[in-house]
Amino acid sequence: MNDDLTPGVPTSVSAASQGDAFLRSMQSVGEKLERWTIRRPLLASMAWMALLFVVSLTVHAPAFETNDDVVMSMIVSGTGASTQPDEHLVFSSFAIGLILKQLYTQLPWIPWYGAYLVGIHYLCQVAVLYCLLKWRYSRAAVFCFLVLFGSVGVQLMSRLQFTSTAVWATECGIFLVLNGLALRRDGQRQSGLKLLGTGVALMILGSMVRFDSYIGAVAISAIPVTILIWLQDRATAPVQRIWRTALVAAVLTQVGAFGMQAAHQYYYSRDPAWQAYLAFNPYRVKFNDYCWTRYTTETKPVFDSVQWSANDHDMIRMCYFDDPQVFGRKNLQAIVEGFPWAREAVSLQKMQHWWHEILSNVRLWPIWALILLQVWWARDRQFAIRHFVVLTLSLDAFICALMFLKNPPGRVYYPLIAFQALYTLYLMRYCDSSSDEEAELTSSTDRLLNEPRNARWHGTHFQGFISGAFCSIAVLGLCVGQYKAHRDSRTAVRANRQLHTDLARVDPLESDLFVCWGASFPYESILPLESNQVLRRIHLLTLGWPQQSPINDAVKAQFGIRDLPQSLFDNPNVYLLGKGTELAYYRTYIREHYGTDVTWDHHFDGGEFGLFKPVKLDANQPVPTDKPTVVSSRWHDAAR
Image (cartoon, rainbow, N blue to C red; front, top):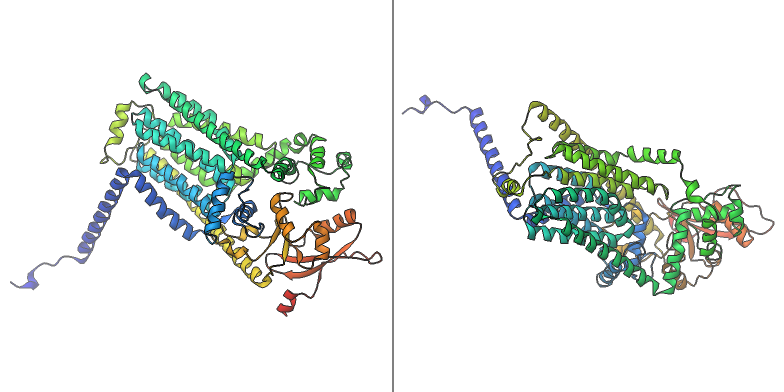
């Protein structure tokens, strides 16, 4: 037979057949992975989230959002601002401090503090994904979770902060409790009990990370969650009533959270020095955290009563309150109680300005885009809208109440607003169906796409168009969130490299002490997942919230400091680390309290900070008004 007479197969047809075969093969693999994920929800949740975390942490290097976490990591690791590992983290539970202290004592080169915050976020994401796989699984819900993780989860990890971590852990615990109650309502009592126990434990953990954050998360969710549970209870048969289970879970959570907080207070009260600090700190925050006070002709008599000048007020506003004689608790208490600061600190104009800042925050846009999609895909859309409105009203009321204390920072309101997306993720899967119908919906792993009647993926053309539009907006929000996280990551990495360069140039001696005023030291340039070993050769006296605490007292004792300003004059190895903007205030402070004028010698100039020494002036010397004088030192000599 002549092969030339045999009709050949067109190349394009052959390529198309190969392409179809490849697509069918990939679809088969995807279906097998999906079925395995549904049949092994816990193992699958841990595996998939481990993969996502590895990718996220590789692409986006996490950084600390505020310097508080860096100082806390120094305290518990015994580096930088602390002479030895110490469990007194002040804002987090002593139990967490004890565990981290022991870990740093045994394995000091591992960044345990940053790893513990990342670990909490991992537990939260695993728990949420497990709920989606365990109760009313659908591809739509998993898609929304991936968008939620890619926008909110990555944002919280790339800007690590113990306050936002505590809020998110508490909110994820509430999400688990809701899903556990739903499972028990639908007859899966054992699985529901496990979710309930995990949710309670996660909420208690959130309270241990920061109790105030736990209170905030519970405050915004108490009313909407109570209403939701009440409606679920009414929709079930008497034998399946869940209000008793919900009440037991609520009591256990409150007992655990408030019990740990009471133990925390008792632990600190056993040490008189820490007890005095905890009595002092609530008054201190009114000046530099809440920014209540102001020095005017109207308020001047209040400051005159404790012999404060306008510069003294500026000093504590800028986080200098080292002297217990000038900035002691009695003086702060007299000022705080001597004028109605809280009423004067907030006005309608300020609240409008703060709300404008919140609503214009680009980082929140992906959350609102995801909420639109989840409400549209809800099984009972009207039910989801009503409960979302109740949560929103509760959230707005809490934020407005918070504004009477201070301008809410992003680390507070961002995770609270993110709870709206987490809450609607639950609402989109909820409907008042009978347990038999729900069992039919969720028992078959072959029926992988369990979409509601009023929000199907493949419905009318109008529904498809709206779903596509909302899905596109959500994906666009996801891209915005990823871009913001990547930009923050690159900025943090550059700052970290500059800090390492500066520290290498300084090459501090064991006898050197650097006094860090406020945020003058680039704390946030220290990355959460890098070893604290880089800080073991540098000794810092931080003039932030640890002032007048046993932490700073121990550093002062190690370097023989009784009077900090005098040591800056007399001890050649004690330097003021800063950026130069605070020097004029310090000069005035020395003139008013020490009766002498000073000039400044500039010993080191780095990309992130500089080192200065005050020099006393004779009575006949004029006070300089120009920049600090660059003097010969071991750093400038080395540079030359």
